[in-house]
Amino acid sequence: MESVIIIVFVMGYLAITLEHNLKLDKLIPALIMMAVCWALVALGVDNFTNWFDSSKHALVDGFGSMVHDDKLHLVEETLLHHLGKTAEILVFLLGAMTIVEIIDYFDGFSTIKSFVKTKKKKSILWIFSILAFVLSAIIDNLTATIVLISILQKIVKNRNERIWFAGLIIIAANAGGAWSPIGDVTTTMLWIGKKVTTLKLIEYLLLPSLLCMVVPSLIASFLPAFKGEIDSEEEADKPKSPHSARMLYLGLGAIVFVPVFKTITHLPPYVGMMLSLAVVATFAEIYSNSKFSISSIEGEEADDHEKGAHHSPVHASLSKIEMPSILFFLGILMAVAALESLGILFNFASTLQENVPMMGTEIHSVGTVGVSDLVVLLLGLGSAVIDNVPLVAASLGMFTEPIDNELWHFIAFSAGTGGSMLIIGSAAGVVAMGMEKIDFFWYLKKISWLALIGFVVGSATFMITRTLF
Image (cartoon, rainbow, N blue to C red; front, side, top):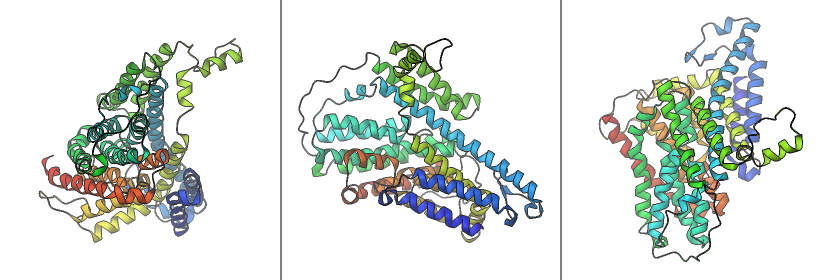
């Protein structure tokens, strides 16, 4: 039965990887894979001899000798445990996405356009690279890429010139997301899973991530594509909301407040995110001059309520949330949880540790490369080909290293920045590909080598500097 579950997982994984060829949204195979895997677990529970207790990170003693009802009860408890852990991530992402959409409702990101006052391509490259690096650490790399390419389209009219800037934005956004607990989904998973803390994540990864952005941008600035000035036509900007700048700074500040709230209260991050969302939503409703219509008021006419909801920035923002992404994360994380619960990932990790003694436990001297480093580097290369979410989810179930162990920080960096090497290797790359119709092979030829250099430089920097912390 375990073999059947693994086959289902592999087939679902392949369908996710080949979503563009199959023309099938990846959330569909992810949800099917999750449901089928857990159904097979429930139906074949009497055939399993191992069961993994995620709360204790150890195999359950005597699972094979338990009666059927006790095994089913344990399956239900484990399923509920994993659903709770997954829900923490999803609720956190929903809050962050809603705040970003509220900022966009007030055209807050147009404020960023005012920072660009030059026509020199090299200067624009550095402005957008730095903005991508900083913004992605605050609002996540996917959203930062969408925002900056939207602004880029208003500044650089020639598409053949613009796609070069978009390629470097992808590299910078993924680099910026790696060193922040809220900058990338995989880093958020490690943070919420209590594998890394905010301060140590910044200490370990800020410099490697910065060099991962700076080195490719520096090399690119000498390429012919970034020589000279852009050809742009002056156009009148549309009137923007008088509250746009205010909502931009309020929204970004609210998201940055979340790690601070977690540090002070020691509560899960989604609690702080919900508080931040409530504060931003309150100001949004006040500024929008519309009535507060989160729920219907007794005695109010239905038409009037719907009219008020239509003009509510909160309702408008919630309607634009990327629910397919949320459902994809639900499917893939719960499917990986099924493999973890059967002890498959634990046994795989044990096999690795037996055959690779240096796996994540050795003390490194400055500049040395251990076997565990090669494994994590391969994970980074793998994230360029397949989605990094299941790779990191699997690593959470495989390794038992304590919080803030260097292994977790290297995984965060490798999975976060490795995806830049192919345009399909990261959410930022996929969305840029869609917005600018960037050809896969054009990116492979023109941008991938820059991303590879940044990844190698950043990884080498991490290996050298990790002994300092």
